[in-house]
Image (cartoon, rainbow, N blue to C red; front, top):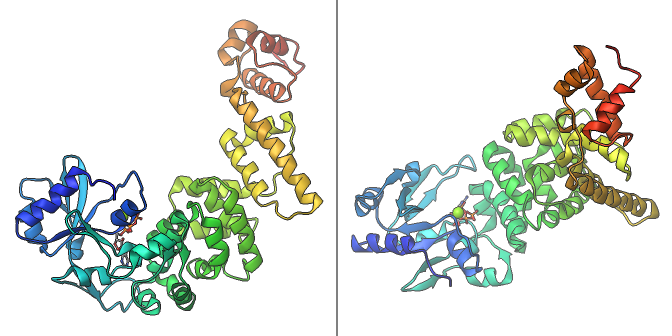
Length: 419
Ligand code: ATP
Ligand code: MG
């Protein structure tokens, strides 16, 4: 077990000094046991009530954040900690919000309401790890398993299904059989979840190292949360292709969201746009994804000139993403697919070389500007813009080097020149 930051020990000591129990709980315990070096969120559970927590941290900066969950956020020497009273939740008539939250006196009850065994561990430096549900064994085996009866736990809170998939992807864990069956049986409840929560869990899932495997295996559950991509829009084979593509792509959100939508949304982009708006994906990512989707059928050749054109039109980064996506979706082992992948790989290497060499891709990067053309060549008005555009064309076609003297000579001899 790694060492706890001093602020965590201090929080435990302050609560105990006020006469209460306190344990580290949740993802931090899981991640300490996995040997994760950087842990961001530190959650402490205690038998103190919210007002008692605030009293124990009198003099420290506090914020009440959890609303009726009673969570108090404290900041000790720059470290944020979330202190939550032991609690249980009762009645989930809408499959997402407990009808009531009840504070309870025992850690045991608090751990029993948690989602997965690996998330239901508690730790105190004096007592060591407290494991009431076999979480350590599942952690060692790499298993996501519900605490309690999966059917009931997923019916209480449908988000847990997406959390299970997210953890399976980010931790590269398997989902235990009964837990997997519980998801398949409750996937209808996934349509009732808050869009932002779905978005966040899916982004985490898509960007995890095992996203491809999880998507290919649990696509029916995902289609429950994403009815736009349910059959017939995207069938089993389509989802498998998406899974295989995800497995090869770098874990950038825009790239992986694009891969998710690559197969099931039509050429107009309207379906994709509606879906991303519904999920409240941030504006930037949304725009990036929709643009990349427009590039599904853009022809790509492994030649310097066509790649200069592509990078000029799309921007260097997006051009690279487009290449990666087209390659990821060129699947199969036949000679055609192999040739296509080889060509896209050559294109990728060429593009990287061009970008690394600082290739000129836009008017801004030309070695001449409008001022040069006016002072050196006496151009005026619209002729300036036209000449600059001609310079860029010539540089992209590799007819002229992006060099000031060469470009001025080019403009002097340019037929379109008209003073
Ligand atoms: P992460 O690394 O993503 O922060 P985490 O396990 O800390 O993982 P949080 O969402 O921060 O996840 O939640 C903290 C803890 O609260 C979880 O470990 C789990 O014990 C419990 N928990 C969170 N969401 C749920 C839920 N929907 N149902 C039951 N328990 C939950
Ligand atoms: Mg956390």
